Amino acid sequence: MSKIPKLVTALSLVAAVAACDGVGGQKKEQETQVNNARDRVTQVVPTATETASPEPIQVASTAAKTASQDHMQNSVQAARKSVNNNPVICINGSLKWNRNAVYPKFDRVFRMAGARPVRVNPENFKSKAGTCNAFVLVGGPDIDTRKLEGKNKAPLHPKAHLLTPERQEFDRLIVRYSREKLKPLLGECLGMQEIGVWEGKGAFLNQHIPDNPDAVNHRDLHTVDFSEEASVFGLGTGPRMVNSNHHQALRKPTLREPMPVPKTLNVVARSEDGIPEAIISKNGLFWGIQFHPREGTREVVIYDRFADLAEREGGTQIK
Image 1: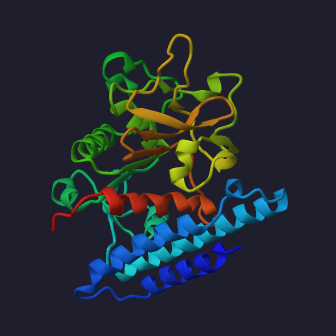
Image 2 (image 1 turned 180 degrees about the vertical axis):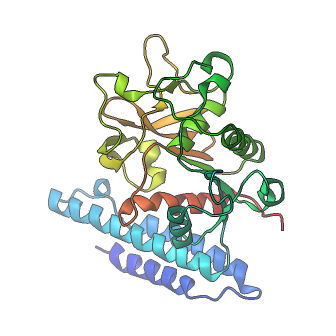
């Protein structure tokens, strides 16, 4: 119980930092305070394993920790805005419609996270790439497996609905650039598959999940089990319901293909039928999620955490 005053003090410090205006020589000091406040909140909130209290108190402690972390995240976002330290998140999209517009969902969630979303396309990539702290590959149609290399090259499935050749080549450029420049990269749905097939020696694609009679419905809510490594997403560990809408995915291990995902990537979440639902690169900079976090739910914390990664690891922008 003695830790509660420390928690209140730490949260007050976060709120105070969020109120700073970030001008003049105070900017660097404020950024340091934000990081210190984040660390203090994480340290002072007890977990269930830190006490021998009965189960009801353990549950209360876990709930308090979750609430405190949510409050901390909101305060860190506000503080990021107050010191004008908005990481630039560069996002791809369809090349068939407005090539300069960020998809509305991604525009909203990253602005809420205190980041600045920017659309990139083949025309502006050379001029904008240097301003990006991180990149995002959004969902879309299917990868043309005939254009993959080596053992990952494969005939098309009859159900395949392909990306345009221009989009496929541009998305591949983003993966390659992010790897070379050590920029954080988030891939959602198709974007996760693109990270898989173009990272390392390339992943094998499951071109049509329903071909497996034991497959769950991946075009609706379904259960995904998150490992401890997936805790960086902010969704906790263990099973939880997610929203998906895809018929392709990275393959799960089989006797014939025991390593269908490159060694540079770790699968950190799987659906009940074994399909990879989230990946993280060994260096922690590439994140892939096969599902679509729903706005209005706690799932959008993933975008907040990715904005944190972009701010922390995205490097200095080239003005």
